[in-house]
Amino acid sequence: MVWGVILCLFGAAGTAALAGTAGIRLLGYAGRVFGTCVILYPFFLCRMLGAGDIKLMAVMMGILGIWNGLTALFLGLFCALTAVFLKMIWKGKFREWGYRSFLDFSSSLKRGGTKEIPVPEKQRKPIRIKLGIWLFIGYLLYEIQTLV
Image (cartoon, rainbow, N blue to C red; front, side, top):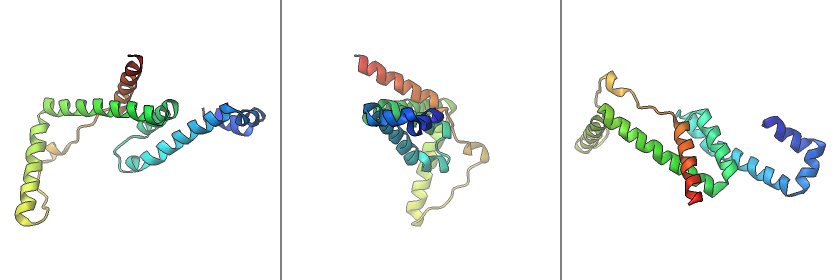
């Protein structure tokens, strides 16, 4: 795909394409993809999102456009949030998370600041999910919504 964009932009056919509406569409697509990657890159640096998830979101935003892409993105993220919530309940971590949050909050009120409460290493494992499948489900929900 990258080579096709380069050839289209710098080749002889690219010069003719940029003169018409196809060139404007291509530049709009490239701008949306690049902008989405730039906006989501800090999440990758903080290890909150993987590179594949960012690329999938960028292509989704590029193809669907800004507002339709955001709709599909938020539908996918809502499905992922629901999956994590159910996984936390299933593994019994939701109760521990709520209790730990309460202890952190109450200790900060008593001491006037935050203090780390020791937690066994077994409980510190984060719950991870594959985000790509949930983004795809969000895209399918968006397409179903547009058909109705």
